[in-house]
Image (cartoon, rainbow, N blue to C red; front, side, top):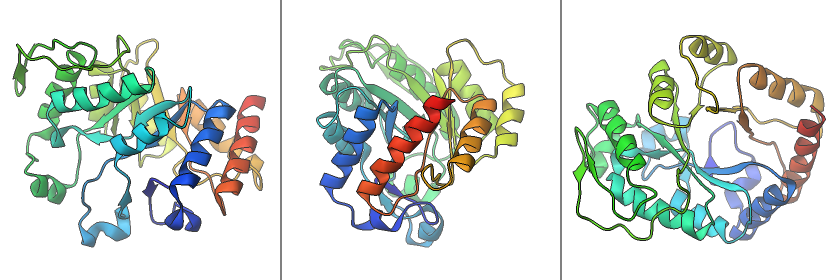
Length: 276
């Protein structure tokens, strides 16, 4: 519902209500799923709508709402674009979300690729990778303390109070992307990698090129929608393929005709995963 991609999202999502969103989130929470995700795009160029879609709910507002609708499921940005924000802006806003949710934030971050959106927002597109590296280091120094201090290549601050801050001593940071560089960035600076738009073979090839440390999260997506009720065999094979590729968690897109059917699919998906 909160990110509607052409050829992936179900038709009913276009007219979904806030009550539908809360209903699905509560079902996922009660069934024991690991995390909910929400992506960031401020404004998508109309010429790109056929590929990217145009519906992207704001992640901070959406996850803040869902924090009050759920109890244990983690709230994951997938992803926010680092170049659109100062690190202390992220630390304040998402640190507050971590506090409101009782320490359930996972901060998914990305470098960004939509040059027109960078230009619209007055963000710097060239050199965004190096700037993102510095932003991650600045976030690590800022998320869990009200007295942040950092001196890096692009960001420097000291003598400011940022309160409230996150309640987790170390907020998990997952790096999104679809390149080997994104995996290397994640291993070097963060706690996990959540790639998109890659085949299983491409993911396996990248993982052979990088030493992944113990406890590092590899969060892979089903990409296409799975249908555990109608085709449990294909769903099970997809989950097995992703697990074989190194997934420690899987973000699933589920085929559904309605919110109620979506929740039925979640039950079937939970049971299918538990059997394996």
